[in-house]
Each structure stands twice: as C-alpha cells, then as structure tokens.
Image (cartoon, rainbow, N blue to C red; front, side, top):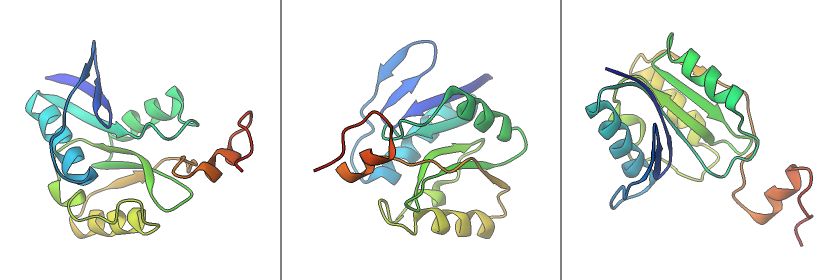
Amino acid sequence: MQGALLIGYQIGLADTTTIVNRGPGDLGDKMNRAFLDAFHNDFQQVMIVGADCPALTASILKDGFARLDENDLVLGPTMNGGYYLTGICHPCRELFLNKPWGDSSLLSTTINLARKFDLKFHLLEELTDVNRPEDLANFGGHPDPE
C-alpha cells in the first residue's frame, strides 16, 4: 500500500509529475476518475487541489492529510462557497456527480451529501480562490483589476 497522493486537478504529484488526461465530462467526472485511479493504485489517502488558490500552503496540505487519519472527507472551503481542496480516504462517487460546480452552494451541497452518507468530515481553513479577475484584489502584490 502506498501512502498519500496529491493531485492538482490534471497533474498527479507523487515521486514524479505526470500529466494525465482525465477524459470527458465536468469537473466532478474528472475528479472521480482521478480518485478512482489513485485508489486503484493502492494510495490510502488522496487529495485534489485547485490550481486557482495562491494562498494554499504546504502546512495546509499537511494538515489536510493529517485530518484524513481521522475523517473520511476533508474539504478546504473558499470564500465564494466552493472549495479549493478535496481529500478522501476511500472512493465515494456520489460526492462528485451532478454538482453545482462554480456555484456558491457547492460546499453546502457536498457537506449535506457527506452527512447523508454518514461520512465524517473536517473543514480546513477558508481561503480565497481566483475565479474572476476581480478576485486578484484579495492577494497582496497583485495589480488591481480594471
């Protein structure tokens, strides 16, 4: 059994970096396939992170993996109602199907499903991601959007 795997949406980060085409469908379909592939390859904990969250740190990732020791699901919430990180320690396809990706109800929808399936979950610290040019104003050193 392998330990933990961190996936950046379409890039698997393990001992080497591999670019993998996750196939057709929406983000949930692609995330589900990435999780299933990782568990098929004997990883015990898998996290997927978005590349649109500049405030994400190695410390937060370490905390996420540590929280997976005690939880089925770890989410890193964003200020817009979504999440920048999803971590699980066993497949749960229903968490990713037919979700309101990009909608402010994504986090609450996912939490409700976790409760429905009796999944123990933990929320990491809330961060801001970058979905629109105006979101850059939330990060120091970035020019103001016009």
